[in-house]
Picture: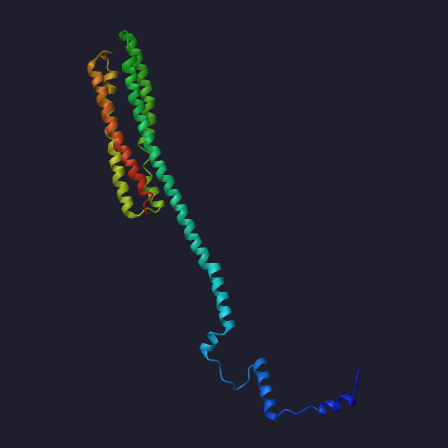
Length: 241
């Protein structure tokens, strides 16, 4: 290691800097390291455009988006999608329920026609067939009544839970009133045939019985088409925004 005596002459022989240059270097060094007392406070515009401030703002904004805004928007989209899926299920269910009502009514009409077509014989045999018919109709009517008059009773409440607009709910209530009237007319259309087939004086070759059967069949067909139209309108209410 060289001794201080050998190095000192070389140091002294170096050119000397002016005092002003030394002062300038010192001030630059101080400004880099720490704030100098009595220095001019930074302008707000300069502070806002400082890279570190911009970086911090960007990080804060990203954190806000990541923790609040994006989850909120995503949640809203998910909730809306789930709501629309449940509405679609309800619409399909409405169509299925009314189709089942059509099936029950057509089943009773077919039972009447089968009896009128196949029942022959003595009075005793006809009475036995009528007794069997009465039991069959009782079962079919019970299944029909348990379904047709009750499946739609909670539909208005379900429309509230599925957040249907008020105008859609008003239309729904009007359609349900029409549906109820349609059911009443459908059961009335079958009643004359039922009485004729179960009457004590029933005759298998009675022309009036066949006229009643044709009339009820025609009337049920018209009422069924009307119900199908109602089913489409009701289902559409759950798809409209």
